[in-house]
Image (cartoon, rainbow, N blue to C red):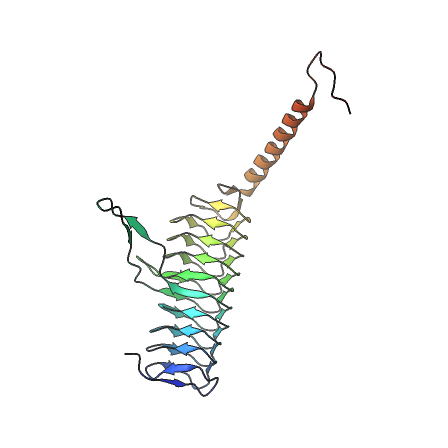
Length: 252
């Protein structure tokens, strides 16, 4: 079982007798630290947050209101803002052609988060299926980001608001993803790449630099295409407005 639960002296949250919580950690009202969990020195588990069975949280990490951690190992000095969820099942389904039923694929691995990582409010990081989902040291996620199962992020990656990483995608070190941009499943993005806002990466990006558009391409090419499209559109509109030979121009 989960052992017996008792109020933690520093904060009043509930801690399992089978958990290991540092003496100076804080567990606030409504929070729950479950069996087999480890919470390091100086950690703060905020109100209504949950540290699930077997989860480890490194020293100095802070969970704000309503954070849920399961099936994960968290490094030191990490910060999770309100409503962040780590370790939920990834999105993996198959259609059984013999029955027509939609069958869930097993999602049985973990999430590994490095040191000094910050996860924004309501962001979700799914547990792995064929490999652990990984966030390297000093990764920073804005609010509302989605990291799919088996994704691996290198050191210092920055994900702006509403970024979505498909399952099994791989980011090198110091990749920057602009707001609402996305990467397709199984895509690899090289270290030092910056992806413009609202862009879609649907194939590997092998060299550092800036990319943008859909499908994402080198930023210089994207800008040329956009400029050419604007010129064509402007020319077409001018042609449509020009009077046909022999006809009078429309009254002003």
